[in-house]
Image (tube, rainbow, N blue to C red; front, side, top):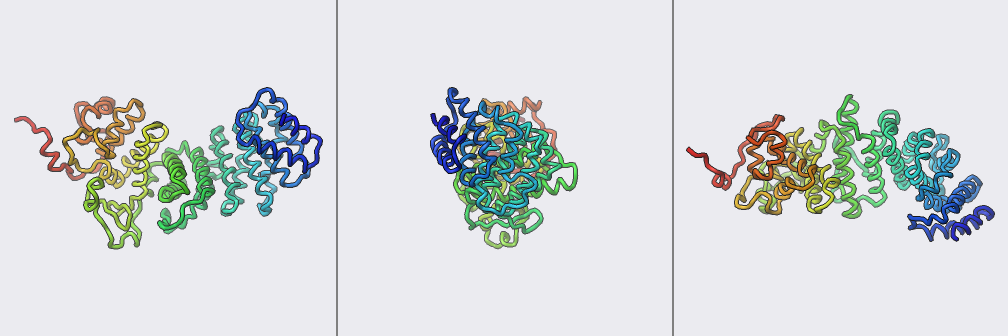
Length: 487
């Protein structure tokens, strides 16, 4: 009945009446995602009628009402089949200011039309294979990048950036060809990295170091959403970037990793938004060539080298680690390097373990990232070893019993999910420099048996990778409890 009344007004009414009836329809169906099949034909005709209205010279408010209803109707895949044409797609591109002839974004009154048009395109491209093909034909990715460049440094149009980025993410998710186009032809990597810089208001203090305002306000909801969409789009653009082939690539990935380090050290408007932001940063860091992840740690700044310092030996016993790790002005420091970002990753990993569910999607990316960082960068490995596997003092309880990070990771070594237990065991093995005797000391033989069997190391030895030699960290408690050889 709603569709029939709206269709009648759209076909025969003037702009004011059309706006009123479509606003009523939008208010009533704003939260509708499932539609009655009996009214399918009416919804198709209503879509067609709305596109015809959008061709006319109507007020901006009427355009917005038309687009709001079109966005709602585009949630129904069946409705999109007859209306997804090149002509209709071009109408939306024009309203979204995606045509190359549109040089600027000066009319603030047009912004709601641009945003609603981008929302419609997101739904239509996601739900319609025909729209996906037309996106390639119309070179939609290039148009979206062009629009991004127009609003790159203008914070008051975050909604436009946000839905432009979301549409880029959808396109690059559905088409591998568009990922390649974005990466090489459209220079999507530097462009999207600059969008992140703008969202975070980054001020560079060195080539790969940014200033962190510890007393600054959290990101606004709009800045956070914009950053999350940029991170997701960048993930698709860089998903195949395991190796750096050119020096320019190495520099660009290091810049991006430095931006992601900044991302890890700031917070969003809520705890949930901060976790979502950091989760997407972790996913993207997993695509960065491991050789470029050295920028996650950096030498101390002048302020951080001020005399206030506390060794972790002076902290509560559950935070004890080796003396190389200290707190300076609330900054986690190891061997003269700022380890804040790595500490954030470790805390993020522990939170994901504590959730107790969705380990494969939520935990394995950060565990894999920390494993590769530890394997490639000595200071990161030694810092994580201090935090995760401090010198053993409790030798009476089994390794999996307790609430420390080590206890939690050891429990994961016998998890029912093969992928989860493999990456947990691999992480601990790398922290032990792939030495079997060291791994057994911290995890016990039964917990480590699966990894050792897979590696052919049940009889002892070490893995294939070379690591620098560290001093023996056996405590007196461990030496006294350790089995003595028979003579």
